[in-house]
Length: 113
Image (cartoon, rainbow, N blue to C red; front, side, top):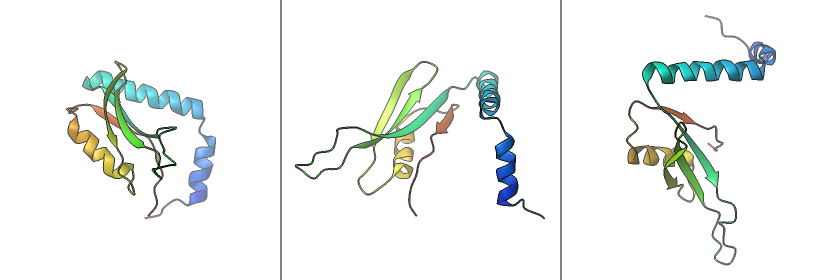
């Protein structure tokens, strides 16, 4: 079995129009939502600006949040533990919510291994 090289993938992705890809992806996602009757729940992590405390040597607060995009409704939020990352906070957030049958999207995030 042959596996395409990184250059082949690069050339492929260079030819894809970002706008056309976004339209196609959104159309596909909307068809899933309509066919399944599911709601899209985006999950995203954010560092809250101005939440650090220099006097107490406390770092900024980082949270993971869930939204009901169709209804523009905030569903829940969990603080990311110090010396941790979003990977550990996302399951904690999901366990608090009754979102069976929903489509969960998770924003890309960086972490170190």
